Length: 416
Image (cartoon, rainbow, N blue to C red):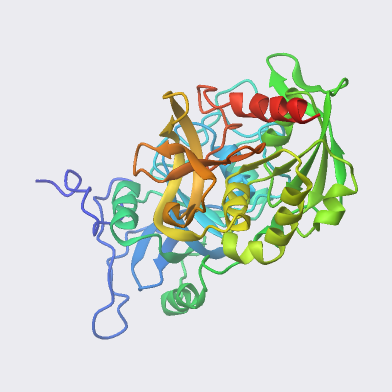
């Protein structure tokens, strides 16, 4: 069997240009940094255990440390890179054609990307789309994001699946000079996402209003001029398209910072409260967010949470969360709605999950992953309170989950 044919093995490594895959190394006696280095290598991924994957550097000429994860989506790389939920993470894209639609100012989820870096199998594809305003390479440089191309992403993904998401450093060094021991030490010293509150880094600094609604062909983004209700959205790292979906469903949206108290939220006199997505450990962010959520629950207002917001709602209700080995990141995750029996194809990005066994009486599981059976949605019996783990706003081809925004608005209307 050729080396390329056996690339599925978790311990195989880099494929650079016309070179076959070069095995990453695990340190042995001595310095441990004795992996064959392909000619022309200008980038590397160095893991905390000392394993090195070589490649071609792309994007900004710098180094970034973070948790190395993989995303299986075939579309939406710009939305992924700008999703605040990826703060602290280096994204391995399993789909090879990254860059093919370029970048633009519309397809972003936040102004300042939070992802630490990216890893690709092939070189960045030149843009071939009428909406492209800037090539991905130039966009990465402008935002200070380093990356690595020419790496065997299949092997890296299998390694992550088998051993969990590791800490690592992605480095782009055009001069080809690497201090591998120092890079490995940087990865080892990185504390990891467990126990890390990252919502503070990506939240807004002050409250603001939002009325931009969904995008249409040749019409661009619309405006909500005749809202039927007022929603306060707590920003733990909110994606813009979530706010757009709320506006499109008829909401006037007021966005408030993550560290807002229940009093801060309620003084806006909302008809409902939304808890956004975001990065990091929900238990860490929950230190200040859970009391706020509990205060909102006491008010009796309708409440809807997504992703991190879902996890922290569970914490506020008395449940627990835990870190997954690899997490769910992609746009093809099947989720079953236990109330209707329908299966939705969903977009997901999370590394923590609600512990089903810890859910208190009166809190029901409403949605379940058909990949691993994990909790994908909860609701409180007899109250207008519910949440989902996945991203109903992301529209990864289908729009199977958009009904959730209308469900929220319906609950608000019923409560009024």
